[in-house]
Image 1 (tube, rainbow, N blue to C red):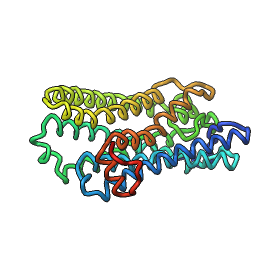
Image 2 (tube, helix red, strand yellow):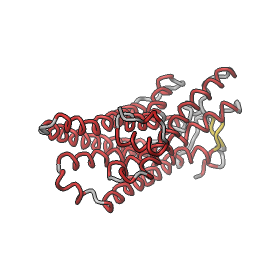
Image 3 (spheres, rainbow, N blue to C red):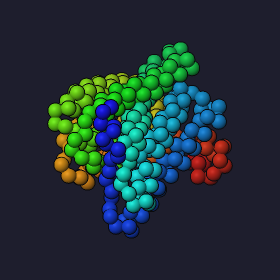
Image 4 (tube, rainbow, N blue to C red):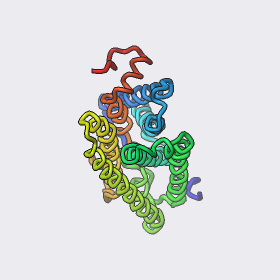
Length: 311
């Protein structure tokens, strides 16, 4: 990478130059980060240590918790540290690492959501074949595929972006190194290859989203044929949370990468970045645990907290 010698650091977007507002930013991000950290760790431990939850659905949920912990840890601590130290800089290597790991975790997150949709489809639409189709070996392969796809996809994008020449300064209009904002800094005719890769990625993601929608249409048809109202409620309780997470992740991510980047920092860009990079790691533990009696029971046995009693 020839530009590595001339570009030693990038400057990230600062929320304010006023010290009091910088502290407020740190406190808000700290609360969000701790909520994601505690929530996902509790889910991970509940599933790992409770044999009642050693099923395919919870195995994938445990992987999702690990991915969420990784994705929010890539961006938030650095942003808080910059505010505390009253600086905006991130090294070139640090920016490369942020792009690589964030893309890896986000892609793995999306892949796991697809796998979880497939798991729910098999469980509800083909229950007689569920144990054969979702055996332990198949689950490990599906989870490994999600992680590997994240790494490979990230290698492709990170390599493409940082092979470009940055000739429009080093100020990134975001609180982390985000690809659309980095492309603004490249020369006018040198980023077309990455744009083509992004366009292909968006088409692929849209195809996966269509697969998820079709799966849920089949799921809802099967649920409506369940004679027991309690059975319908139980089936839908595992599907609606997943659909909410998928929709939030997809639409905010698409908006961030499809929206034309403005020449100056935009509050909308900041809000969208927070929505797709920070909200899902916080919401996943809430969505998957607060209405899930099995996880609440496991957490109660694990911690003894009355908060997790079944109502």
